[in-house]
Image (cartoon, rainbow, N blue to C red):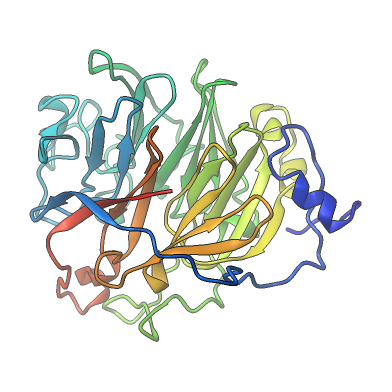
Length: 380
């Protein structure tokens, strides 16, 4: 929900990356943000770094030393591995074959069931989000989890599980961001809407904002491709809730948005880290940043620029700290549902391309995806 401003808009915009500033956004701001680049720069070059003709991928993670990872969610019947490290252009099951050996009917507690995201942190770990919702369905046998894997020796250091009142069976945990500075992680639930706050030291968790409109996709938004609204095979219109998530470089602000509309929100993480903060205070502290574009994932660079993929227009955009949006590249052939993002130490934005709108779910049960699936990168 929007909060009334107590300072002028210019002051608010200058504080976007401030660590402790709790200034609110102005209700008088424009309702819609457009590309503000007066003279279009030369489009960024999209370089293909990985392709796979077998399985649909969603996540991408680049470690500090350049190691590259991706994941394949268990959405369709054709599925084998869940998480791989890409070595010499080839997928190698990660952290080992056993974790990637799940079959329906088995216990999924010690294996990957349906992995949605992989994220490399700044402390040498890979975080793996196993939503365990096969085909985006209910959680399989209470096997949803988050793994923390030590990249130095590829060992699983810790497995985080969630009580059913925090992540119930209808919750599809989607993406994660890690704050090693304060010892917390944040996850979105894209099915029922909400943010899971995880204390990575104690293992305690809390589910917040479920009652907030900020985590729910706007039912009035028309999520469209080539002028046609996306619909399921049965004619229903899919609405996915809180999905993309990002932490400001100073870890003071958590940014998030529903998948199937163009709104963007943020909240101060100090409130989320204190588990005694009343739910009502959290609800009242959400800041509505306005309309931008639809995006799946999102990522901050160290300068406070936020990167989106405009799913509907096959573009990558940059939102600067003053909330101005600039299109970096548009490619209707390569950017067929830009999905997840990871920024490397040498200044590349890595983008996974998942082609979700071409899946059988939305095309009368006909799979129209164009192989290969790919991971691209562009210099930022």
